[in-house]
Image (cartoon, rainbow, N blue to C red; front, side):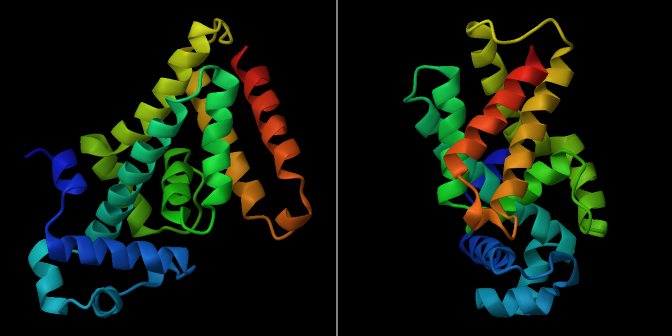
Length: 206
């Protein structure tokens, strides 16, 4: 079983620990301040048992983040596959982020770290970079690559470097995340915001 398969199908106690981390992130707990004892207690797993599966807290948190994002991206891909145009497919992603904004904070963490914009992850962000070299960006980039190829099919992509175009996609997703979690988000017309994000994306990729 490769590393991706291990993340997708964890052992029962690993899964309990992953879910505990995800729940705590969604409860706005400071990830960098979390302790193994707190995670183990939340999961209903002994601290000693936790160390049988993970060498450090950082390893546990990173793997929990990837466990969650694999699940989220799998759902998103199934939804966007049902749409026919790039616009509608991109809107499905934004719709999903809006509807699930209170339980996709791990998803947002990963996109922000991939964009290099998360400010308070400390050792966790450093270990993300290391882990990313071996596995990590495969799932984030798989979604970005998919949208890039769909944009190409509709001749929406200019002659810029592919990396720059993928960065544009990523930056617009991060920007929408920031809108969703803005303190004044309740006063924002979200449909208008989505079209604004989409227009910004088209301007960047042309």
